[in-house]
Amino acid sequence: MNLVGLGITSYMMATIYGLLNRGGGAEVAAAEVAKDVATTVTCAYCLGEIDPKAKRCRLCTSWLDGRAERLVSL
Image (cartoon, rainbow, N blue to C red):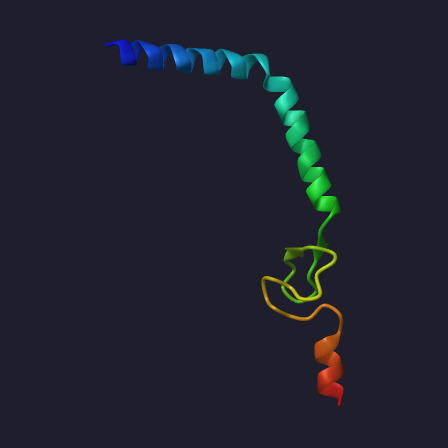
C-alpha cells in the first residue's frame, strides 16, 4: 500500500509542476524548432530536410554538389 501512495503522490506532484510551468515550455520548444528550421536546407531531389554542410543527401543519397551531373556529361 505504501508504494501505491508514493506513486499517487509522485503523479500529483508532477502534474502540479507541469501546470505551473506550462507557459515557459511552449516558448522554448518553439525556439528550438525555429533554430532547427533555420539550420537545414531542402534536397532538390527528394525534398528532404538535410544539413546545409552535407555533400550528399542522407535520405536519397544524391550528391548535392553537382557531382552526378559532371560524371554523366563526360
